[in-house]
Every structure is written in C-alpha cells, then in structure tokens.
Amino acid sequence: MAKIAFYASIKVDIDGTTANKPFVFNNVITNVGDQTDGLFVFSLTVRQFSHSKYGYEGHFSIKRGNNVVMKVYPDMHSRESEFDTASGTTMLELSKEDTVYVVADEGGRYIEGDEDFSTYFSGYQIG
Image (cartoon, rainbow, N blue to C red; front, side, top):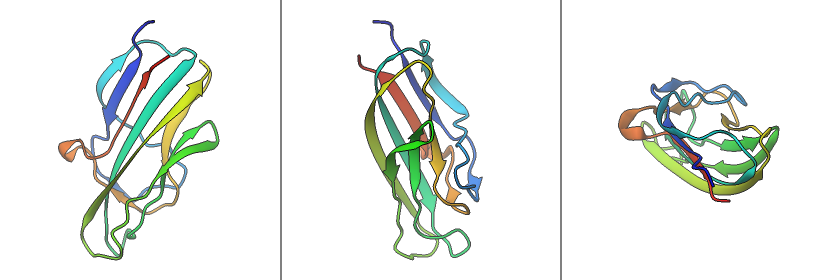
C-alpha cells in the first residue's frame, strides 16, 4: 500500500470565524501520496481565545461533503481572555471523490494559528 498522509496547521490567527467556511491549513508540514479510496484516520486540534467580543464556547466540525462526521468543543466557561484547546480523532471509509474539511459551526470565534502549532489537522490512510 502506498503511503498517504498529511499534517498542516493554521499559519496566522483567525480574528473572527465565518460559519461553515472551510479553514485553510496553510502551514503544510507533511503531504505524502495521492488521494485514493480507503480507510483513513483524521485528527483535529483547535485552540480558541475567549473574550466577550468573540464568545466563550466554540463548536468546530470535520465534515465529509456536507455531513458532519466529528465535532470538538473548546469551552472557557465564560472566563475572559483565556485559551482552551479541544481535540478529536475519527476514522472514515472514503472514496477518491470525497472531500474532508474543517469548519467553525458559528461565526465570530478567535482561533489561535501557528503559535506552537496550536490549531492543526492531520490524516493518514490505514487500509
């Protein structure tokens, strides 16, 4: 089986997310192989800043096409000017035509970018 894997982070902070707009993970660390059918593992970590301007609880999703397949929820419990990180992992059977991506479920959230690779997305094929 050919190696297929990627790992990328967000290079700069997102100062106000847009609901359902795919995140751009523009700091690519690993990108090996070509898209193919198979069983894949995906991991997502999101680091959010809490502030009355941006909100305190975030909902972020991995989507396959238009379907949500996993969510993560950083929640600062209304604590002002703090960070929280949420992570999750999922496994998906994909066809070559499938698209997998990350979105914020609501707008206005502040996401920390490339500081110590604080928001990142990775995936690899296992079968």
